Length: 406
Length: 161
Image (cartoon, rainbow over all chains, first blue to last red; front, top):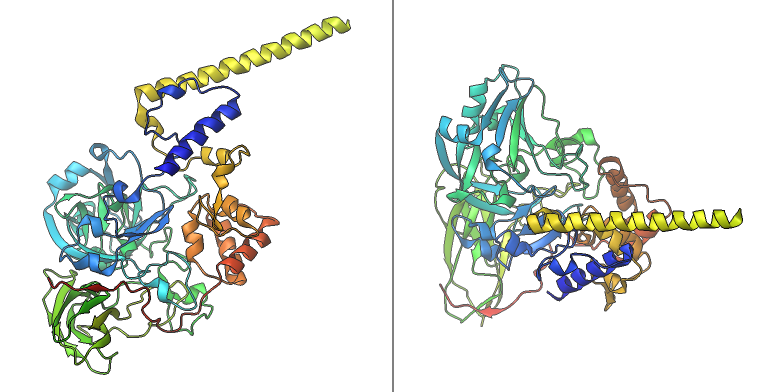
């Protein structure tokens, strides 16, 4: 508050200074109003986020959850991470919103209004795991460039919309189609209109899945602005950057989509393993598709002290990109022994699964509870950092919490 | 002749002052009226160009205030090169992105080139060395190994749910 007042004062003062006169309507400026260029919005209020969420970056807005905030089976908006590459769009008019299907491999270019999309195609609702490709980046050594996400850039909300495949088929897909690419209305950080912050996509096989949605609702309500209002592509189980926000055009491509952040090294990992810190040529980098198996202990919050002889009930979620999770285990002795957790089936494909366990501790002291999930191909989370990669993607190392038995 | 010229000059300068003042008053008036009609017309930008204008105004000492070795407006450490970083590196993205990233000189230069080639960053000239020196001195890479120990644990008695 103090800072805002100060900012306002300096604005009035310096404007007056530059002009060499008083601001004519200065007295008309309302009490809480900050002049253009000096708004210092509270991101928690702006995006309806919980105060315990962590802001990584204010321009562009990037915010993540901490593990215990993700305890809900369906992630509510207030605990959902925010990832932006550009500026959140302003003045969206959903009544005039249109979606165009075009590209080299569309049979007939078509444009739908939002209302047409809603009335013409069947609605579907799925709970879909959306995780940032860079979730866990902060642990890589040598450090990787970008937002230093810890564990909280993942969420599993309920999304309602129409199937992308129904809409693509209405326009017609040529035989040579290989990829779709989304286009959206968000602005580049430099405000250069010729630049786009992000325009990514997925291969046709992913685009045509039942669960790949053009969503207009999140958790039963209009999608919050920062999460893509009024229309968002949702590709569960893949890097969240494929789930384009504020989408107004989808191109059916006869090549791998070459939009912003599809080329170069963005959202790519070395095609072959490399040593930490090794330089990798662009042509040796491969696009990330399905996210790897991972889990989070969401209860209790790390740092719990419990009395000797008392059991500790833990719970959390596990997910495995395109696959199911077949097993979640826990260890209280740094991986020397593992015990199975009770694991629920997903409510639908690509939704995270819930696990729980009741743990006894042999004696008083400091413990760490580690959780390890295994996917339906038998692949488990590593306890150490997985393979280093230049951009710090795909860290699915086991999550752990600290516990003291006193 | 001289007097006549002088008089003309005076008239001209008076006229130009008058004209400038008139334009200024009109401009402010228009802005004010626009604001009264539609207050939201002014609230769409977070960090418009006017922030630069003010940040360079020498009258506002507080704008670049430093407390306990920290530049309050950005959170950056006060050290040689601070203002070069503030003025060149916080226009497009916030300083938080700068502080989060720990890189050596070579990788910072690479990153600057990438920003220049793809993100509209300008030529930094002599400031480039100043900026890179500031970053590697004040935000050096930390070795983390394959897995760090848990730190900053906030201990609390567990009331079982």
